[in-house]
Picture 1 (cartoon, rainbow, N blue to C red):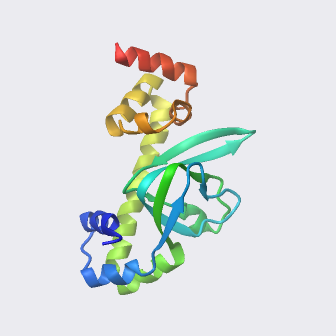
Picture 2 (cartoon, rainbow, N blue to C red):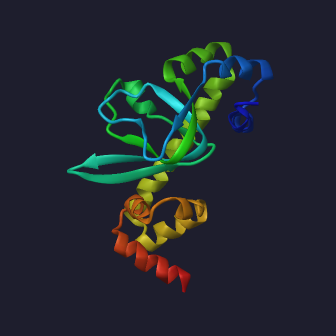
Length: 191
């Protein structure tokens, strides 16, 4: 099945009949991104959500010429700036690939139309939204409360694969520290 990974991920969350998923999957578009290619730019209202079938992306903000990485998305993650779409406000973040990636994409407006005909889509949307909100809350709390070593340790525990796939300066941005500080922390963790 072309959308097998998405089907499995949705089935973990909600009950979909195969015929419902087949109808839903007809609205999906496959998007291929090369390395360092922008999927969702800033200064536009977000229109689509995606599912990372393969690859790695990051979300970041630009301010005064500096990039601030706020999230990473790996295989089986859902992506998209629903707040921008829902509030009809211009997005202030950029989502771009770190490595070649494949996404399954659907416009938010079409996804929402499935709420009536396939109620499991709305249930899945609520589960994904709650998960994203919890992730943002935990990260914000960690940036305010935890020491850099603790933030690094949490990342190491929650997603150790990122440390091998993401350039260290982006990991440092995400942790809210300088690359030199990350080097010192990594050395302490190795010893």
